[in-house]
Length: 356
Ligand code: IPM
Ligand code: MN
Image (tube, rainbow, N blue to C red; front, side):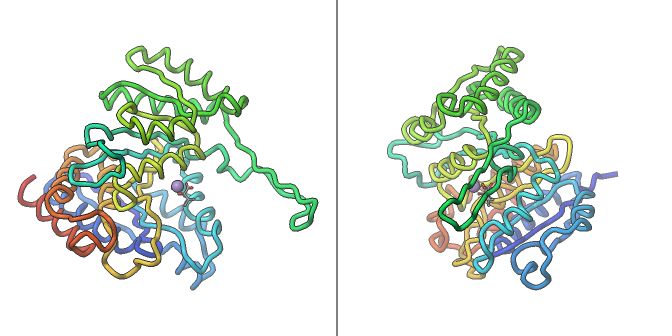
């Protein structure tokens, strides 16, 4: 009997539904050629749903999602809703609830894609960021006193646990070993200033490194990483870092791989339910226009299949993406592709059907 994966789909806000539709289309195309089936279950979470019902993410929805094999997410964010509400209650809530402790961000410049880095080519930009996804500054620890007065105090704490750091670091070493490229893992920290948090990170990193003699264990401060990512991106193979630094450096990394139309990521719980998303956000100004690039969502679907243990189907998606970026799309930016959102999905589907 063939395996059926239950995929929970959260199209979400803005251009989320448009790009998710293309991701689903491509997933269906690879499933047709594979021994597995996919069953998609849709969840209407996001800003519109919140405005209409007052609901963010209910316990019942979390219970229902828990039955899925993976979550495929479009975008969460709405121009009418105060920043933080949807992000914290939906996106971060999902990451924390399902203990998706790794945010995996492959950074790869494909042929035919423009990078703002002069003289850099696809061979130079091919690395992966492993961002801790459930701790650090994202836990919501802290508080404020005397808000709105001249005596106001605001404290936002970075929580780093030995367990949380160690499991993320271990994931990164394993990932680096399996990726089998330069076999170099760089810890991105700030040991010269954050002498508590990154002392824990560095000691954990050095201890775990002893179990991986085949991996070069490298360290760089986060500010220096920003510099080198622009100057010498070819130095990186896998980077591991905390939640906040990871958030920042992965937007920089997205830019050097061609922008938000391309960048995809996975929120991974290696033993539980993982969630995959294009990282570009809801892009309200492009909503409904069919001009947004769906490739980030399609690549997120690829990472989903890799994580589910379907490497062949995942590689067909990547082949389709490579072909369309190299031969068809004029520019990866919204409105400049020379094709509509769904035409890009169709091009990838027809390549997968005919050539893979
Ligand atoms: C990301 C996003 C989120 C984050 C926001 C939307 C809460 O920027 O996935 O990188 O900060 O993690
Ligand atoms: Mn971010």
